[in-house]
Image (cartoon, rainbow, N blue to C red):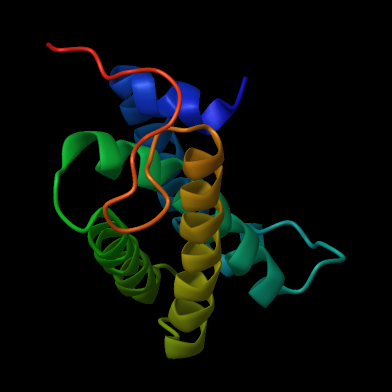
Length: 142
């Protein structure tokens, strides 16, 4: 079973994952620079990975909640959250607001969004092209 298809069908669980993930990002952004653990991985890679995961989880939630261009809307939400995260770091001792970090966050999120969209297509939850028909199960009438 494809986990992205599962998240698409279970909106409440997806909301929980996205909120917990966003809170984890906020928590680690609240840490002063002196309290951050040293890692062998450079910070841009950590930012990329952090928002890659956020993008993976955000797209199924937005897709299940909207009828418009869910990919663009997901990216706008992700970029706005990344910007608010950078603004938040401005007031944390030893941390700074950095445009480069925001761009890396957006790139990681965009990669996560595209992978999530591809996984939804492969799980037959989203038609692949314009006017394409959704293969697999029929949608339930709620």
